Image 1 (cartoon, rainbow, N blue to C red):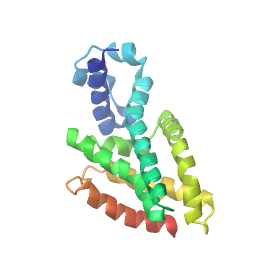
Image 2: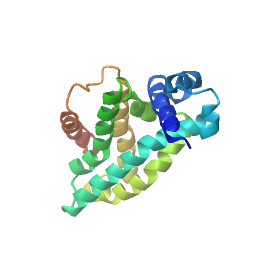
Image 3: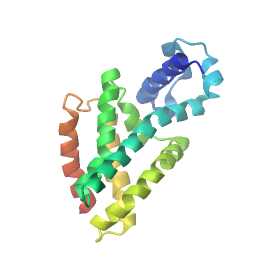
Length: 197
């Protein structure tokens, strides 16, 4: 693959899907923005869905690697508490969103689109990427929240934590003027209370 051309297509697709969602994004706009001909998506990716999956992979693989690294750090320091587990789950989203927003305004909404406007294939792709992360976090969440059935914990992680992150990052007025560290701190406090209640 011509890596510069592929990177240009992926960059343009990220920006387009961030604004229009994975279902609404226009391949023509992506091609125009990337400066390539209309057959380039099919040549390099095989089609629209494969392009979207490549965009998801580019975002989710490092996000989930960072989550697992933060979990490993917390475990190596002793038994992680709920706040540390929540931080390990959400910090990568906030850091990545700030990086994307720094590349071009509005681009962080891509993460919001993953969580709040997923089509069926996006949901399936996210679930496949997240399954090993969920397996890694589950015993620690169960140990820290023994008063809750794990089904309740999983529901709260999905809807309280990632629903909040998705809504925040989908909002055009998302607070990227605030340092990522401040946003992580505030979200950890709020979401720890929601998960633990």
